[in-house]
Length: 344
Image 1 (cartoon, rainbow, N blue to C red):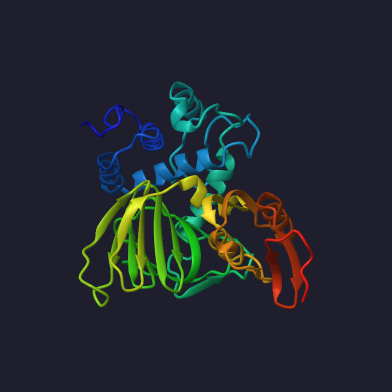
Image 2: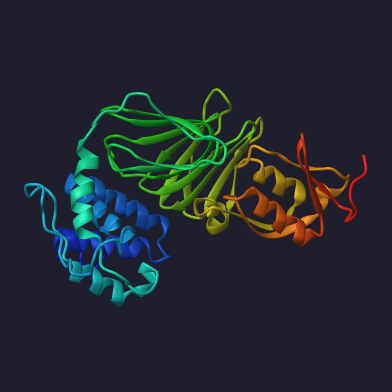
């Protein structure tokens, strides 16, 4: 299989970056494509920069007026220019890769003003901590342009050096979008697992007794620390999820990416989950715990979407669907199976 885009050797740098973006986001990229892409990125620092501009342009499409048709270098000529018309033409030719209609213009001016600043400022970060409270979410942009979205009740520390970029996720959940840099690997540590990025997007959840790594784009290498067991590094591609329960071997399976990342849109998605699991997930986002008052309630099954911005609405939707009753007391929100008022 030829994993090189058609115009890699004959087109300009921006055309190569566009071709890679189309290839990798078309829904059919294999592991070989991602490895070839990594090789292309590592061939020259300008490749990294060019691809970042293409990806950021697409991600921020629609934020500026459509009159901006080209990227004009405002930073002294050190950033590759990107013709809007080329990206638009490519998107129209291969709409599946870009998720349908092109919509508003690429945010070219915004990209050129912001991206170089993110990459050049604070070249080394030493022990910078980020955290969220219960029910809070936060987006963080790192010095190299990588981003982290922290979910509820999450804490992590970022340490950047000249040879490595390290993140220690001490608790909670975070979604990583990583700027690839072969000279400085991006490694996330969570419980007894380390995750090494190969230019991708992935979600990590670290509970007390469980660690979960879910790859939505690209490739990561997952390794259980040697002090835990002798497990060798395992390579995960998009659609793979690795789960490590305390004291048990790492297991790998597929997962539903839309369901897993729904928290980023303020939702929790359930598919025939038992009520015990549903309430445990809800309780990650609210300070008033939801508790099951009657025996056997934890085995009721629920499929649906609950909003995490409003606990009252989430509980109301859940009780209506399952024909339950909710009462609040000093212990939290109690769920009862009977429709009759509870008698103490």
